[in-house]
Image (cartoon, rainbow, N blue to C red; front, side, top):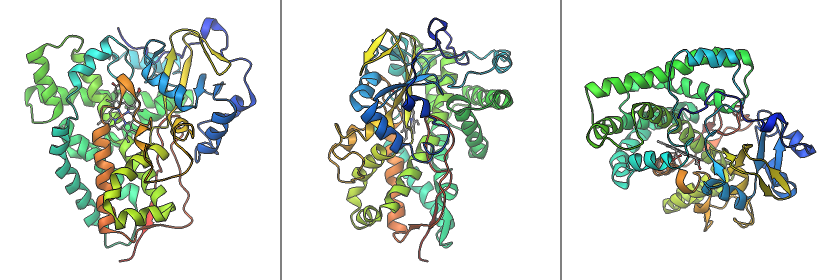
Length: 430
Ligand code: HEM
C-alpha cells in the first residue's frame, strides 16, 4: 500500500463538507496574523463557543477541547492517521507528476500509518529512544550546548535561535542517525521547505518550485542508507539496517526504512528547535519563572513539562474520520479531515485548572497532548525532553542575567502545525 502523499484531501461525494460554515469557521486562517503570531486567543474562543467547527480555508474540521482531542489521538477505531503527512494544500497536477516521475514509494510508516502495519513498524522501531540510548546521548548533548554557549558568551547579545537552538538539535540527531555534520545547513533548509509543502499554504507555482528540493531531500536519505549499508557505524540507522538483515521483520521493508529515516530527520530537530524557542521566550517574558529555575534548578524538569503544555512546538496534528461522527452538535462525515488542535486542548481549563496560566509548578502538566497520546505517542519524546532540560540547565547556570531584547517582533512560519520563533534576541550582563 502506498500512501496518497500528494493527492487532494477528500471531498465527500463531491459535496462541500462542513456547510453551512459558521462565522468563526470562516474567520479561521492559520497562515496569517493574528492567529500566526498568537493562536491562543482564537483557540480560547473556539473552545468556548464552537469546540468543533469546519474551516473552508483548510478543508478540515477543527477540534479544540481536551476530551475530544485526546479521544481522536487514541481512538484508532474511529479515526485514521492516514493523511497526517499529506499536504494541507493540494499539490497541482504538475507537481504530482514531477514527483511521481522519480518513482519514490512513499509508504506509510509511523505518523501516517494505521493498524495493523503501524503496530508492526512501531514494534520494530520501539528501541529508538530507550532510557539507555538517551543516557548514551546525554553527555554529547551537554557538550554541544556548552560548545555553542562558549562561542557567544562574551558577546552580551545574540539571536539565540541562530546561535544555539537552530543547530544543536540537528547535530544531536545527526549523530544518532549517522549523518555527517557538514550537511546541517542543507538539511535544515530542506526541512523548512518540506514543512511548508505539507503544512503551509503555498501557491501552485511555489509548490512546483519546491518539488526538486523535496526530491533532493529524499535522495539524500537514500544515499545515507546506501553508504551505511556498505560501512555501518554505531548509529541508529546502521543498527536498523543490520537488524533488518538478521530479523527480517514482518511489515518493515526497505521503502519503509527510507521513509523512517526521512521522517526521523524531519521530526527530530525542527520540533526541538521550536520548543526551546517557545520555552525560553515564555520564561523570560514571565521572568519570575526564569529566576525561580535559576535559583532552584530542580524545578527545571517540571518547568519543561509546563513549557510543552503551555506553548507547544507542534500545535496541531491530523486525523481522518472513519465513519460519520456526531460531536458537539456537528456532524463530521466519514472521510472528512480533522485538524486536532493540541494547543487548544493543552489550555483547556476542564483538564488544566486556569489553563491559560503558565505555572511551572503545575501538578498535571505532564498530561499535556503535545507529544500525542496512545499508539502514535511521539517516539522522540524522551530525546526532546532531554534536550529542553539541558538547554535550560546550561543557560540558567551560565547566563542567569539573560533577558529578552526589548521591542523585537517574533515571526513564525505560516503553517498549521509547527510553531516556534524564527529569531529570539536576548542580552545579558558581561
Ligand atoms: C518538542 C518536540 C516534539 C514534539 C512537540 C513532538 C510532537 C509529536 C506529535 C504531536 C506526534 C504525533 C502523535 C500522533 O499522531 O498521535 C509525534 C509523532 C512522532 N514524533 Fe515527535 N515531537 C517532538 C520531537 C520529536 C523528536 C526529537 C523525534 C525524533 C528524534 C520525534 C519523532 C517522532 C516520530 C517518529 C513520531 C511518529 C510516531 C508514530 O506515529 O508512531 N519527535 N511527535
